[in-house]
Figure 1 (spheres, rainbow, N blue to C red):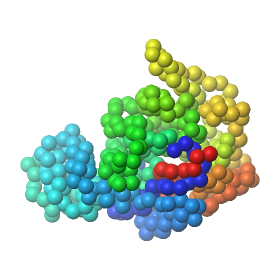
Figure 2: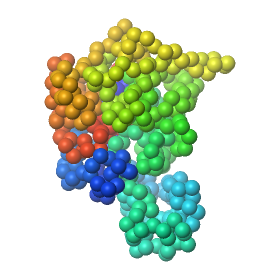
Figure 3: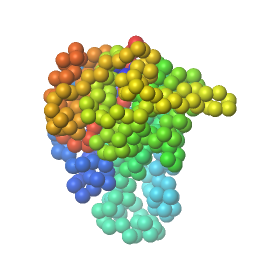
Figure 4: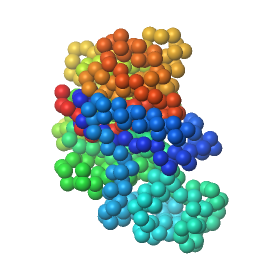
Length: 402
């Protein structure tokens, strides 16, 4: 992947399924949602999103199908079970019991547990009672395996950069198993296994070094922007930079420090690229610190420079151009805040100057159109309850090179 705005050719999405049927007001916060969704309407909205992607010329790949087809491989099944049911999380007895049961389960049941979760009551119906304190103290409707509700946001578990992909170590426990599922797809699915994709990173537990795809914008063949956010740390940026520079996959990274609060959870909640040298930005974003990270030498592997001149100047440095164009909503402060909360800046470019955005964000849409950007509007009243827009819900894996 060498561009944010080249013609989109192939993209991974995930239609809301069993995991979101288990999202309730009482567990929403733990599962990183602000509210539960009306699943039937969310599915309708997601279907409209997928149709818009196809209408823009992209092949739409569904995550659930990719994972199910991968789990048909005995190697994938064994690897996923070993990675998922770790005794540090489940305790040795319950981890062994779950691995033993699911090793012989059908692909459909295995998928439902990995993505949709498993309660104690459900486990009692399917498997022998394990000699486990963890199992014993659980209440009937407690999740032994939590549902992965955030698989809806296919952007975050991986970063596709150049001719490779990083499988990310994610910030919150509620999302870490997502990376395991993507690791299985990349290792065993015929679309990816043996195709020469480099893996820049495959660290599923790296201490403070966490990174998520919503913070990574591939703005040119030579450069990426990375947000330092509540989800992505400087430690992870430096680790990824070392690997990319060692492989000559990039020449520079510009790291942008965001306010540490949920409304700005990822860089793409406040800044997305919509055309060549053109960005959409949340107008009330405080001027951030920006750092240029470049390859160093044997004695100093990375060279880091605090950039001056503001965000626009730093974006120009990243792109290697004299200046960039930034579009920001000129509506009143209340309209701007509403748009940002409902992912007004989180648009997905499907071609240069053509983006998909939620129809509810009319202030941002008006500003984009005034700037000459074509906007394909899709519904998002239910999908947006998870604090993610069209860019969050898409994992582009192939674009035309600009």
